[in-house]
Length: 260
Image: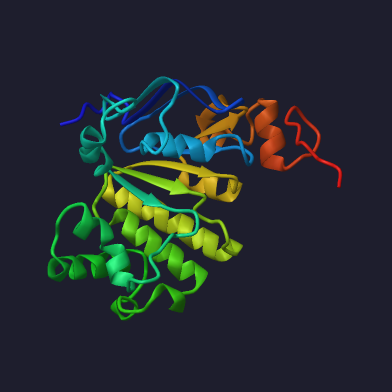
């Protein structure tokens, strides 16, 4: 049984670069069991790279990343497999498999990673669809028959299908109108709480960050420049945070604008 005082996810001095471009330059961040942390920041600041490092898709050049106390930097693919089974993920554009019906998309982790039979996996998938507000009539539809909001819900059902310990959310409201975005935010909060899962989200949508995060961390130029309770983000005195959340052109964050 994991120690509730030990971070479920821990980054220590994590660096990664692509050629001469330094992306992460000393990330330090802890996410405690059952906590929901949202990482905000502009495009190109390294948010997606953070998630890829957690999943082992990228290997840092320096630093430590631990999942439930286990070091994952530099370990073998075989040693990584049981760690990856702790994760669920909602991708930015849902990333559903067009060739599979909805229920098989939801059950993909069950059948492929956990060896659950298709017969046993189908009712589980339908229960997970119900958790995100979709009926059994959706199960046999193809992804092409779904609206954008329905695709996000199916993606969320897939993320929670294996009852993961850690759920990653990559820009969960991208491409949705404000009302559907808020519906997805509510579903994320409900699903994470019902599972007792730890959540790490990346977004530039401040409405989403305020709703789904217990704590918010801001990433800028490869470093965490501020972190604190989500409810304090409006009143914090960090100039990077204030410029970002209010969408101001003037401030310490300089956007490169190239002339035509």
